[in-house]
Image 1: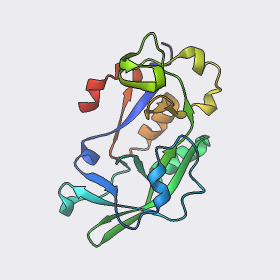
Image 2 (image 1 turned 60 degrees about the horizontal axis):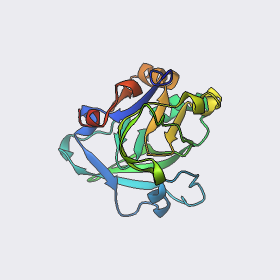
Image 3 (image 1 turned 90 degrees about the horizontal axis):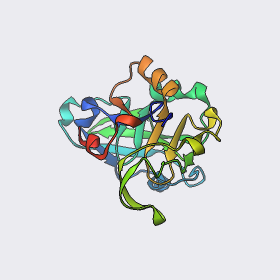
Image 4 (image 1 turned 120 degrees about the vertical axis):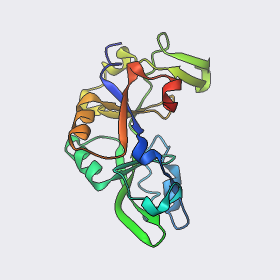
Length: 198
C-alpha cells in the first residue's frame, strides 16, 4: 500500500469540465490511436484538431488541461513536465478551434509507459482479472511490481490493465506549483469508481 499515497490520478476540474472537446474534421488520423500502449509517432504526420462540442462557446477560453477521450494539455503544462524527461510520454501539437478562433499551443499527451501494477488482493473489481475483463472499483498499487522499476521510469505511467493515468507526487507538486488551470488530482488511496463522478 506504500505507493497508494504517492500516486495521483489526473482529472479535469469545474473549469474545463464545463466544456466537451473532441476530434473534428482535419485531425491527423494517427491521433485516433492515443489509447495505444506503444508509440504512435510513426503514425502521426500532422496536427490534431479539436473543437468545442458542448458548453457556452461564447465564453470559451482553453484551460491548461482538458479531458477529451484523451488528455489535451497546454504548452505551459508540457513545459512543466519537460525537466522530468519522462519515458513513454509523447506530445502531439493540436489546434483547438472554436468558431473563428484557433489556439495552436496545445498538445495531445500520449502516455504509453505502462505497467501491470494493480494489486489483485487489495483492489476491488467487478468482473475477472482473466483477459482484464473487469471494471475497476477500488484501486491499490502493487509494491512488488513498482519496487522493481526505477522511480524515473514510473513518474508518469498508465496501468496496463486499464487506461488510468498515474502521476507520482513529485510531478503532481510541480504541476500544482505552476498554477495550471482545468486540472485536479485524486490520490490513489482515496479514489473509487464513485469518485469519478464527484
